[in-house]
Length: 157
Ligand SMILES: [Zn+2]
Image (tube, rainbow, N blue to C red; front, side):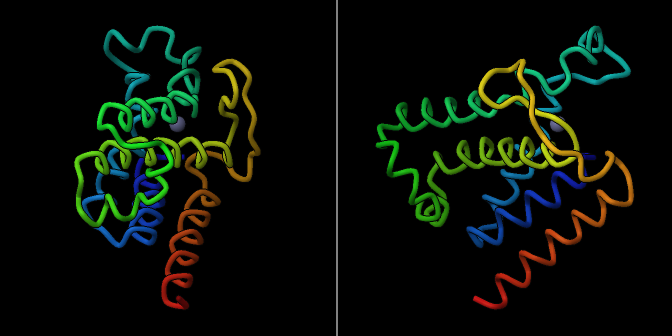
């Protein structure tokens, strides 16, 4: 999925859930994080071996879940308290920003899983379905459908 669609889909989902613009923007930043840490495929020192690294450890969900655990531990927050994420978001607690980045990255991985394969339990074993090709009209239709779905759910609630 292209970065613009990752950001739109993730931002809309996070805003629909939290109704907090700061959290949605942090989620949008996290939505490009897994690709961003892989480096640019066309230039720079990180371009070497980009293809072999693509959707590897940077797209491993357990990495972001572990980061969330470390963040909660560092802030002295019990892990189950993270389930009340919307309360942290409403208070704009600093931990909510870090959690939003990680949740944005997890949504990115989920979005990649519908247009290719991503790691699940280990960085090397990848799973996913290919509903559409990256950059295709199908991707834009998927993004638009997700935005409309979030809108309909919010207006019906
Ligand atoms: Zn990706």
